Image (tube, rainbow, N blue to C red; front, side):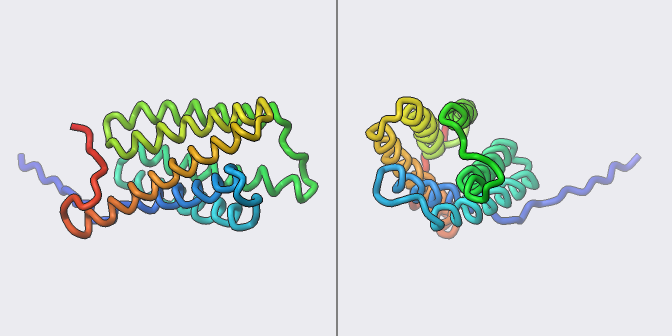
Length: 194
């Protein structure tokens, strides 16, 4: 009996840079605000909805088609994080609901910190660059929660600077993947795990 099988070759683009850049650029902008450099405005919310939110969800769906569970979970989840963040800011302004209480906001940030810490463990099988992104993001969520819990402006500002470094590390990782693929060699190292 003859066994005829067809094997499909995946020639689709790597969606990770899209997700990393959407996350990174939006994270930098929000954390420039958290660091006290400017007010929360439509620039951050617009980026949160479209680039941090929708683009990451699209990247997550594209990763699903590639069979990458980690990236599907990360990009889709953080895309919806940005969409939920924008909703938390905008919905109270419509009068449909009240602004979140401090306790619920702290809980929201802690849950995202726990989730991110779990994904951070997974990055030890991927790359040094992603270890830095997820490690600093875990720290960021817990610092933001602590700042809100204690009402400490200085902790909030410090968290903002951690978030700026986190966002730029994601930008670097996304750009490195694009540049390294184009040049077909490592131009910008991301430190793959051996």
